Length: 433
Image (tube, rainbow, N blue to C red; front, side, top):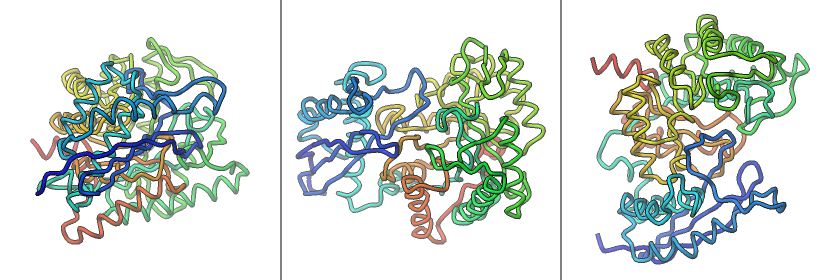
């Protein structure tokens, strides 16, 4: 291969799925290849994750990104000029060193992740490879099990429910295409049920139905009914996944349930969730306790970890060292991987690989403020992650990613390997044993 280098790096303001400004970085290589990366944005955020640089003030609600764009143009562009675009790890290390803070707050995590993704896209394009193949090299790839929101809640829906995401998974589907078809039936059935009850009030940030419920249990009961109405058996063809996002309503071992107007201690919340695990076909729970409640997570994982996936999101913030510590502490058994949570592609990959070494479930995830960039679909496949969480089965910024996996599965043909239930941590550990 002829020597290729980064010739030009630019940045522009574009808009995410909530109509807020975000950063798009565009890299041009010496061979004329162009790569673009876009920074997504989260609503519920761990305190240790990379920080977006926003302008503040009254204009655009304080969300403008002119300062982050300036970081790219004035500092990052000179740093990367002439660099090898195929040295992703070296470029990301240079970005980390240039920023010099633990959470990318100086340059802005939105600036560093957009640039890091742009480098990745440009390198793959220069090699004439799909992004997933560029990531995997000659290694194996897996078509991920999708985790798809039916009802949105928490910070994604005006806190109409305490639970942030009510989702479904089709672990026994034979392919990604079949998993999406099953989910489509459940999503449509849920919408019809909401309409029949006079509860249809549009969709939440990630495309799930807006939760006009009087209790968290009503959402779960309605989700079970939707699965049945779609013609499937709860716990067989379709299981439930929850994102509790407990850091949003808990600190110091105390949890305030706004919808039910009561406060629970750590043990009370554990009993509350364990009753759900007995009553409903729950296969996965994300952040069941707050990021500062390691004891709560340890006890809960010990109680259910052999049959339910317990995911660390705010607790792990896509950080390899925190994943390794969580494995030693037996605090969770799965890691959510968000590239913008880490701030660079290489750091996110390290967290994913740390999770796989620990026997964890590994779930590549979108954010609530998303864009048309489909990179995470390729990351989930190229990193052999096993699971993908994008949001709901509606809105184009979500469907673009689901549809991209469909295309890749079709392109792989007979070589496509769908993760299914094998993507879950207890199955991985059983196979290793």
